[in-house]
Length: 113
Length: 113
Image (tube, rainbow over all chains, first blue to last red; front, top):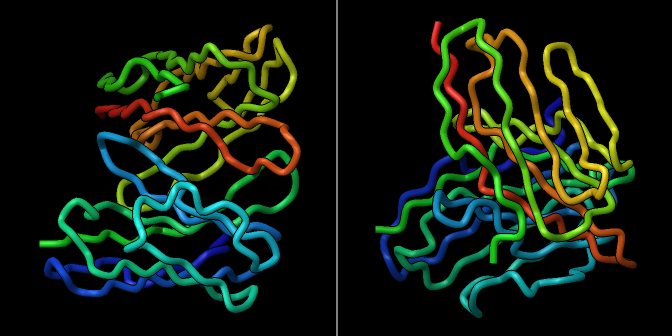
């Protein structure tokens, strides 16, 4: 089932521009996660929220990255300014139930030129 | 530091063949999950194993958790083109409020008709 909707699906931007990625969890959850995926490093956890409160942002690579979750149905990941090394697929995921069962969105493919 | 090693990294086989992929670590996990990711989509959870020595079957897929809970394997019988994708393992630690999963880089499987 489509538990998480991400937008945009693809984003191409120039170095120095601001990028905002969006995540809309459709159904009930208690945790929301932002991941980044690259060929070299695989899936990396950037930040996660519990009941809309940021719990651990130690995976956020730099101050250029920020994330917000104003309510249970919406979260954003912002990169300002963007750099070519930020190019990756960014996933939003939610947790339902126990044992860290995660449901991922389809991701945003970000290319910074 | 990559705590979960997956092997092989790439695998290309013919339809009908059997295969096994591995997920190894020096760390002990409280749970281990297997996901399959198709191009352009997020990972989809296949199974969670939590008990050392546990074996779970999902149609033609057999998952095993090592006795010491440090490793796992996924065996596919009579592979089909629909099994093509990136297979990811992720280990969980039941440490207080730690919701971080440790991810492997994945095994990319191609099943040729």
